[in-house]
Length: 414
Image (cartoon, rainbow, N blue to C red; front, side):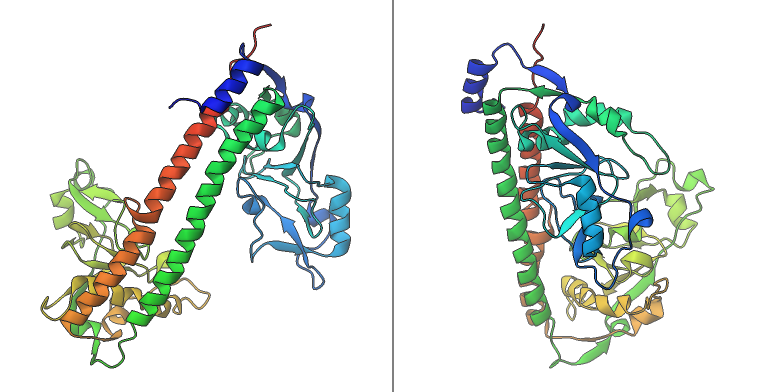
């Protein structure tokens, strides 16, 4: 793709022969970090009302305040402020743990500050635009360099002294500003799509809850309406069960409460299927995870597949009585019953629990009407090939392409 013309014109005018590269330490005023709570203060005390920012709150562009964000009291906030001195225009960079997450400080903070390991980079505004630095640190070019400087195990970090040595292009400020303007427009569009997707998800949930309230119809146990069975795992000690396998085999992580399966866990052989309790399930079978973090989540098979023992597979006994897609939505509506089993312990359900779940069954035509409505919503908010997720993915790829292209410069030969 060609570089946008206004930017190319600026480059041709202001730096036709390349740009100078400088070490980060030469074009910033300071590089600092926050304070470690274990040595200086207590988190989440009764009087703590100020936010304490860690890597999880760095979105890449902004600081996101979350419900689970830690808090500090006024005294602790003052201690951190004295060390980090956060101001508008500072760039935050996670230098420990998940290295490379960034955010731009848009306004001088009044009720938040950062932990130790989140670095505060203060660009010299006479030579370096804050937004330009933010985008450059996220670029493939920068990551290829600074990731080689990461040290430490099990907690990885990049020393401040090494980060200061990161060489970055310093085009004229007008060029930096135009690059920031272009990339900001991509982020703004992406943000709009994310907001639209979130709104559609809420709309989907509202319709889902309304349409699944079928209490006026006859009640059945799931075992009265469908076959219910679990799967199995061929022995990993027998290569003949796995090598050159052609049969789809799925683990419970495919259950994501969305009406599709987007990944195949592994492939097994005919011998592996015969010599284990794994069973081949029909297309349009509903899967329910029975164990662990995914308990109660469902999936809908778009192809034949075998499953492991941590899932149940459900298929209608009579297609003239129960629509397979409606069965999927019935099972999804029971999610909270599964999560209630956990009770702060390891979550586990069994086939007996699934078989005894009670459901109300409307006539087939009503099932089909409900399925038609919910399928449209599910595709809109979950399908990565169509709908908003596909558009959002395309925009992110477009942004990443332009970011890497726009931040690639020829270095001036001295």
